[in-house]
Image 1 (cartoon, rainbow, N blue to C red):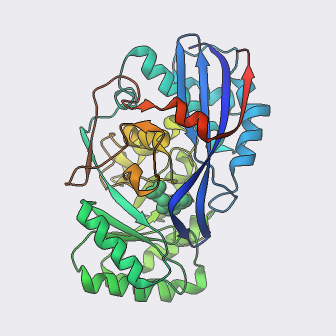
Image 2: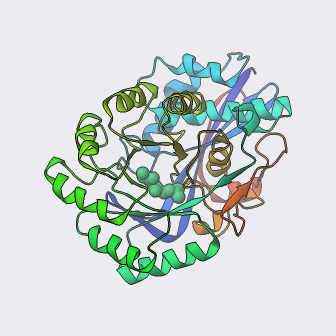
Length: 370
Ligand code: OSB
Ligand code: MG
């Protein structure tokens, strides 16, 4: 694929309902879409960087500027045999993995379309349907949280994950377990606790959780190993795993028993596959995390989730949970069994809605000749 130009677009999309984590509440999403224009056709991807530097240090403005001034120029004019080769061209830029992932994944999208192959197959996927879970934010009251859980269970979701933080944890988990003793339940702290909380965190053990996700600092592996030794509950790392090397260290140290893969967080599909394979060799199950994506990011998450070691339900849920109208069609939806069947169609298997994207676009820039 010969890259001729790259287009950046920012969209503003209101969320149907606020989403609150330990690091803050969002009512809407700034969405960064990337299109790579190649001689053979185009490819799309979504940069999952947040509205602000709270989940990680990357956010929309750093991603936009880093792609425009540095990363795009590492690709424009180059010819790649395969999308996976693009990562090496961008390696001189340190960090900025969400920005890199958007470019690499757009190239995978273009490659799948050019080869007339489903993206999931190009990635090495084998599963014909994927299992879906939901991530439910912190609510204004426990009653509202319980209502939301009831709704999601009725839709068929296979695993409920609730966000926790100091002051919204033990009591909430107790209420959920009283009402649903048997469901697959996990919690995600988004790095809200510290070493002084180890005794407090061991009390989570009484709730028979599938996992506790990222209890400690976003840049820590070592202290998680100490905590995992004290907990019966499996720790799942999210923020801490930025690359394959981090996963290697976490596994070696015993810092987690499960890993969540987000393609944006680790710099793209090739690094995601490398982490997936490493975990598979070590008997560590992985699942696909979400970043409040629109349909474009969601479709890429679905494709990645078809790799064999994605053994736990991911945060890959229906478009209508977040958006009034999604930018792909058909909208992403789940079966009553809480699964998404995989399409045999070439490329993404979903269509982009250009008119809606145009309508939602608040800025645009093209790097290269078009
Ligand atoms: O930690 O998994 C997370 C959303 C934004 C930032 C971080 C996280 C999340 C989610 C939402 O949990 C998952 C989704 O997209 O449904
Ligand atoms: Mg998480």
